[in-house]
Amino acid sequence: PAARASGALIATIKGRYPADATILEVGLGGLYDATNVVPHPAMTVIQPVGLDHREFLGDDLAGIAAEKAGIIKKNAPLVVGPPRGAAGAFAERALQLLFCETEKKPCGECRPCRTVRSHAHPDILWIEPEKKSRAISIEQVRDLQKLIYQTSFAGSWKACVMLAADRMGAPAANAFLKTLEEPPAQSVLFLLT
Image 1: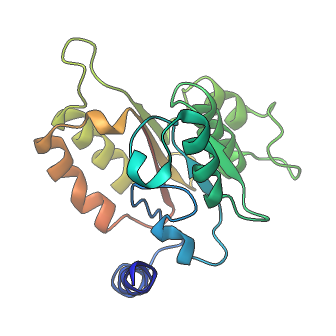
Image 2: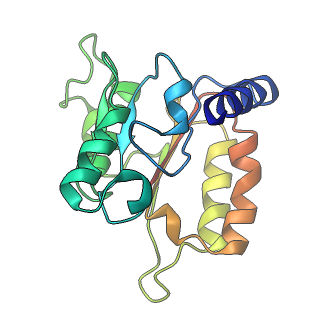
């Protein structure tokens, strides 16, 4: 029943919000994750393993990790890691693929690849919680919207990488919702938590 409901939800989302890619996160993770109804995902992600969902996934970290590995699919990249570690490095690499100017992408040496690596590319906004409040503010979301809806400087993609996206307060999250529901063409958002 859960798989059928998830399949119906995915079909509804695809029909209502056509997109080049859909990020579907349902929370449980692993072999019994509702996203397993997607037969050929572009990638899978395993969040840091903790003692959540013990009634479904196991009583200890080893058992939970083994269950969460059930989400891994053949021929689909797997992303595991903290936002400032492997997940952040993945976002950088993906953005280098988008912005690289050479035939063999990403080269890591052209100007766009270097500016992505140094977080200085004019078409990419890196957002992280403000130091004092430790939250992502509505002003930061408005800066993101300003960038994502304007013409790109380089004439191609526009992107945002939001570190600790789970630190968005309610006003910021509500302001961000419209951008998630109706992203402009040639834009990509990485929400790392």
